[in-house]
Image 1 (cartoon, one colour):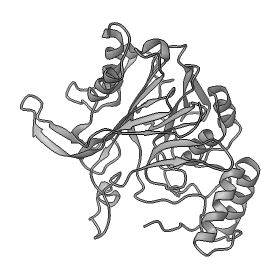
Image 2 (image 1 turned 30 degrees about the horizontal axis):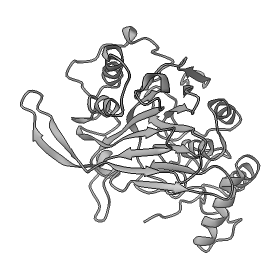
Image 3 (image 1 turned 135 degrees about the vertical axis):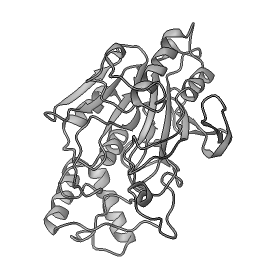
Length: 359
């Protein structure tokens, strides 16, 4: 169901091609392949060939990076849950459903990529078949998780494709990091050396590597400065607020105790899990940490026009040492908890994927 978007002007198409050829030749080659697949010239100035968008929507989540020293098996783990409304994009913005539309994040994919140029990778994605992923790992043991950042700058009247600039949109930057970077230091350089175009949904990254180092990358809304928050060898948490603005849980703003999907509530819950846990953290513990911040509420906090059911759709745990991913998928609501009034979430079995590469 992918349909190519149109550039607002040919000048943007030319700028995009030149930028990719110079700064991201791997994607430049893929753009030529997309053009050919849609029977277009590789120098076409009308259609956007740098992404293959569908079911476009923001990215709400929680993530927890666990260095080897903190885990029972001595493996580096990333626990990550992808949450969103169970509705269409049109309904999210207060419009009526159109026949044939799919609910947001109801058509997710697992992609294993073994390219001629760049590193092999394993990702869980949606929205963009070419670049889009919510989290992923490459053959070098670099892992990237991308979550919405409620405090980051956003373009209020953008093209969701990010096609009015010669730079990269947020999905393309994440894919470039997996394609070309082996360490967190290389990822920082790649971020600083590329131009990021603002889309309608701001995001931040949690990036870690097989050395146990990780950092959170954020852009300040006030002055557009870059911020890197390192983990100092410790577990690192990221939800949906800028960590550099709220480095201490004791400085979080007030939120209602009933607001169980509030970004600060989820961060504090994961922080409490780390503080109270005795001994090393197992993979089962990581799954339990995700369970403590599942979304099973009705609200409009993530940008909906009115309160809509919000659910955890894809909880997952990555093992950097194994280059593997375990994931399960939301199927439906179960019985309602009489104490909270929230439904239990019914998931599929856990599926396991592993990159077929030498470590």
